[in-house]
Length: 236
Image 1 (cartoon, rainbow, N blue to C red):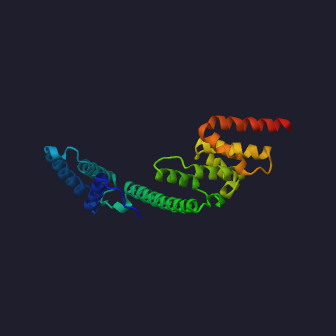
Image 2 (image 1 turned 30 degrees about the horizontal axis):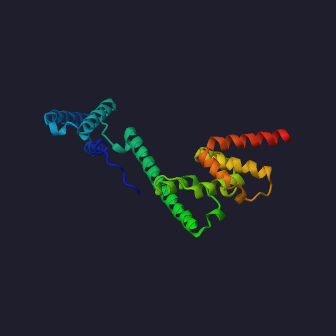
Image 3 (image 1 turned 45 degrees about the vertical axis):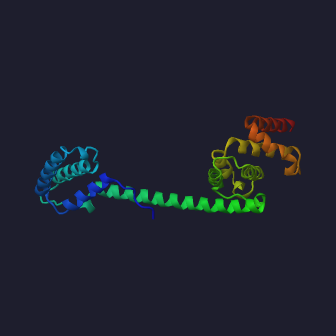
């Protein structure tokens, strides 16, 4: 599991809670007085000017002392029953789960990028079907290439999007892709969709101009796709 980020303030608050466990209101008030004295002493040291832990500890001493002062007589401090502590632990658990999920997703993307790269080297990428999340894999392949556009990958995705292959069979997946893929890939897919409708049975090799137009003039390619859609609709 990914390690919890270092947080001096959180460390200080946890230390105070351990020290305060089992203390009643009077003992917590005495501990607060000591903490305030230490804070005044520390304020004289320039090397502690940027310290995050000290102020957090003092604030926690004050919070717990007030908590016990407001509680019924005889109440002792129990971190396990402290609603603030419980909320913090729940937030920590949620953050840890999110970090773990993020790590798993990064590993999945890296593995899928390796797989697609192998298919590229074998010359069989065009026969593969896209999967959910391949938009992020495209970004990873682009990152690995130093930010250069991976034309073959973009063409593969555009063709799959136009033909509703793989997870693009699902309209929701196509809608999601519209917010994740760059404009030229979407324009390429839209143009391919209309050209194939215009000339049923056309081979993709006959439409090699489409990716060139979409990459160099994405706006023009998108406008052409819209024009062809309108022409087809009006013809019917």
